[in-house]
Image 1 (cartoon, rainbow, N blue to C red):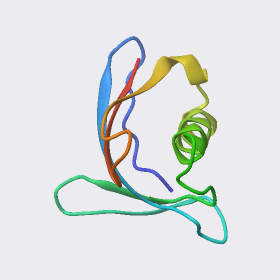
Image 2: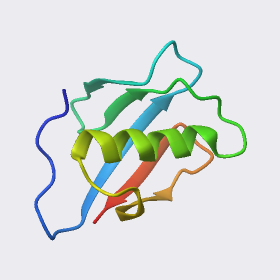
Image 3: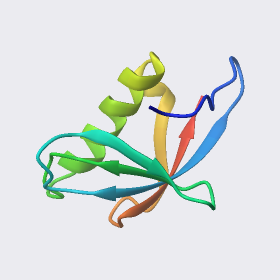
Image 4: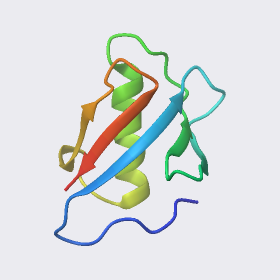
Length: 84
């Protein structure tokens, strides 16, 4: 499960490494540098993987999807995500 990362009413930045086309969407691990590894079931086409990542993060943190934004790496496997 995710380590506790979010504080109410503050912006949080997460570095996330995704692997797409996996059997299911799930948290995998946190690397020594703080990068969070997540497996995504979606394919990386037409923004589907990014949409699934946002949906997954919203579900895990119990927050609205519109509070999550991919600010770097939209077409890369390593993404910088802002929450809040």
